[in-house]
Amino acid sequence: MSGQHAGEQESGDKWEVQLRKGCLELAILAALWEGRRYGLEILRRLESDSDLIVSEGTVYPLLTRLNALGLVRSEWVESDAGHPRKYYSLTQAGKRRAMEMAGIWARFSTSMRKMLAPLMKEDK
Amino acid sequence: MTITGESQRKIDDYLGRLRARLRGMKDEDLREIVEELRSHVIDKATASATQEDATETVTVLAVESAVDAALAALGSPEELARQYMTDNLLAQAEASRSPMRVLHGLLQWATLSLAGFFVLMGSVAGYFFGVVFILVAVAKLFHPHTAGLWILPSGGGGTEFSFRLGFGSAPMGGRDVLGWWIVPIGWLAGAALVMLTTHIAVWYVRKYRRSMSLP
Image (cartoon, rainbow over the protein chains, first blue to last red):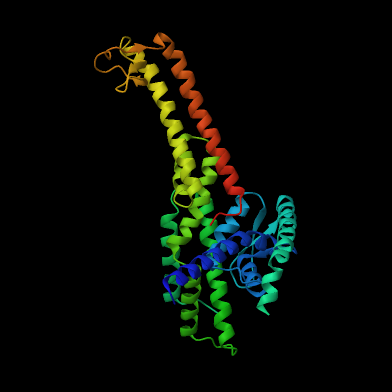
């Protein structure tokens, strides 16, 4: 592999990391859409339905930030496991934000799919 | 299933390192973070240890390696602390509006992005000139003949403005532009600059915190 090719590979990876980061917040809000969940449940949802997780640790500071911004609220709930768990649910502001972001995402992905149609044809 | 002493010690050690790096955070927030991560590690380790061994007897060894894996998956406590601290510092800057808090938050932001670096530079310049105006206004009271905003002939035949605190002698060929007016103008302009700088910096911080790009 030539040096230039390796450089291209690296910037492609970096781009993917940025994309994932940019989408993680919407994915978390979406994971809470159907009701309250605790951190590990959100993580599992993200792992099963997406490949957005870069590091598990990233989700917790993000949840704390969403909480501070008033997009989610949290409550401690006792569990059968013998220790309490911190559950998150969407606030009204969080629901609005999720809807707004989902709308932007839908428009964005539609136009990108159109743009990329010629490339995808060639791939096959 | 119980977490053994050795694994418990590893969890405490990890959380201790995290806690040590979350300086300046409110006790309540600190406790929330630590307890949430503790419950995550225990849940995760319990789930993966019992999954591996469907028979109810989960070996001590399985639990220990599950705890290790759960801690490793969280990333280093230092990196995790950095992620928590960033938003905490920016939130404090946004809420308090004190120049020191603002600069502290901006310093953290500047380590993360170019935008943060530029906002920090702009704010430092704004605060610097604000403080200079105020200092000159104060100095005028003690050095009436030499302190003030002077206009001086510069080397290339042009002129330049110079804020002087009044130490030393009056510059040759220079003119004190504002005279005693520097006292009210200095105070007003200085205070206005500091407030304006804070206002603009907080506006950027607010925008940044609500953008999706925070790492």
